[in-house]
Amino acid sequence: MRILQIAPLWETVPPPAYGGTEAVVSLLADELVRQGHDVTLAASGDSQTRAKLLSVYHRSLRRADDLADRNPYDWVHMATALEHARDFDIVHNHTGELVMAMANLVTTPMLTTTHCMTTHDTEFIWRRYRQAYNTISRWQMAHFARVAPQARSMGHVYNAIDVETFPFETEKGGDLLFLSRVAPEKGPQHAVEVAKRTGRRLIIAGKVDNYDRRFFEEVMRDLIDGEQIVFFGEADARQKRELYARAMCLLMPITWDEPFGLVMPEAMACGTPVIAFNRGSAPEIIAHGRTGFIVDTVAEMADAVADVRRIDPHACRALVRERFAPATMAANYVRVYERLAADAQRARAVTVHAPVPTALAERAVAAGDERAIARAAS
Image (cartoon, rainbow, N blue to C red):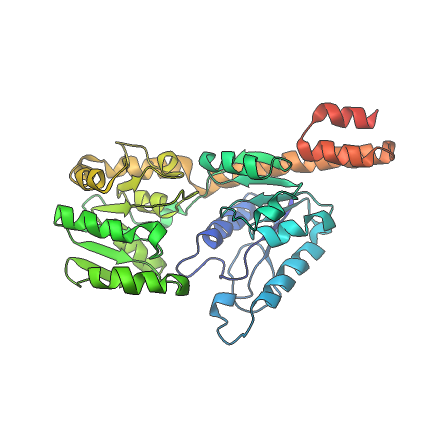
């Protein structure tokens, strides 16, 4: 298939450190090429990919501190990608709502992956989007069915990680690990409480965005003593693998419904159990009692720390290989692409043979209504 992948321009593909969406897009594009598909990746010019690279700007916007306004570069990035849409069988949008807002300007079938949740304002676009989308967890599906009932749901496809690049370690240290953006919804303050309850050292590894700076200064700064509570800072790809492999367990005390936390399969790929609050997709990613624990409170998380030694590191790695490998993710997406491309071809056939009810045919195809497609063709 001829596939156009549109990545955000804000981060390099793959990202040097933080950047979950870009990491997934990188794996997907490369794996699709390995499987024999003709793939073009619209991304920043400093990206590295097996696919053909389509770029309007030579670096990611995160690195472009000299630009007074980065948005125009982002707009041209997305518009240029869609200008080439007619050359492909499928457009896979990983950038969110701006591309969705322009979806009606292209005739190529579009799939939008819901890497982020909606806000009150972005729902304005979702209510008008009539192409297809997929979620990245089962948990997300109910939310988007409510927000965009007119759009075509293609179910969920789990994200993947490059399992073989994560070092497997059976002999663990005694430290707790928090590895995420240092933000209130990620719960680092609760990880500190778990460390104090258990008497164990906590390593906090993560970036502090500008909009989280106040939280870090007002809440986290005084909790970090450099001895029991250690702030590592943002870890790059090599560093985070070393941290995962050595840790006794990864703590995920999230206070929001995270659609898919990549740090969970990443830690498990290293044989490291994960203890997470029962929010969002966490129960789908962690096999409770086998690769970690799902808990409801800080007290339960502290109690679970005492039980992580009975988790088999081999079971953690095996689950990730089974559910979250790049080949699995790519195969699932190809099935979605093929359905969308086949329906688009049928819609074009309806248009040729019955030009009057074209709008009816297009609505039927968008909804996946085979009976309506047949009626439009008759």
